[in-house]
Amino acid sequence: MNPEIRSRYFPLVIRIIHLTLLAALVLYALLGLFAFRTGAPATTLTGSEMETINEFHAATPEKAPLLPITIPFAVVAIINIAIAFFVKRKFVDAPLEAGKLDLRQAEHAGRYFVVHVIAFALAEAAGVFGLVLRIIGESTSVFLLFITVAIVALFMLAPNQIADPSDA
Image 1 (cartoon, rainbow, N blue to C red):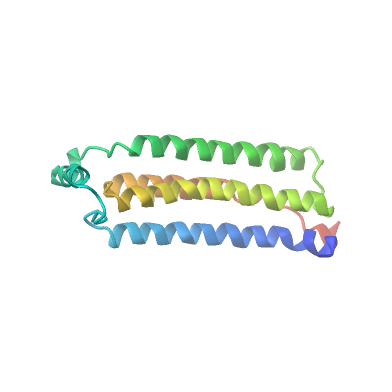
Image 2 (tube, rainbow, N blue to C red):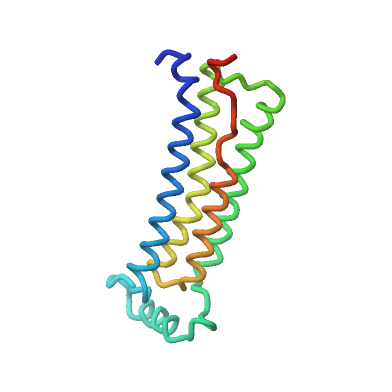
């Protein structure tokens, strides 16, 4: 691909990917809210696992305990989001501010593209973790917390407003 064309369209493609991932999180939220209202567990669970999930569902929503896997998922989600912000800051934001990232150059445009995709994927993972937790029986409030954190992170990781490289 012609480097001039690539550098011109990479920011647009990044914005499209960004909006698509935000839309996916909204769809995850709808799926988690309406398809798994009671946290219907999969039928492949063993008897003791089913008992644990049944005890979880028997608890009142205000006092429902967290599933044992929720805390590790939350830790990994937080680490993913922290890495996403670090990567974007180190490889896109700081070089742009310092004037060291020229999107008219193919190598720089490629870095801009790849770093954003990596950061978006890491943030999106928090929403996916929430959906997985909802599928295996976690409460709606915990599920929505994961989705909300992922959406906020994606908004904060939005592509920088940059001048059109062809204007320079």
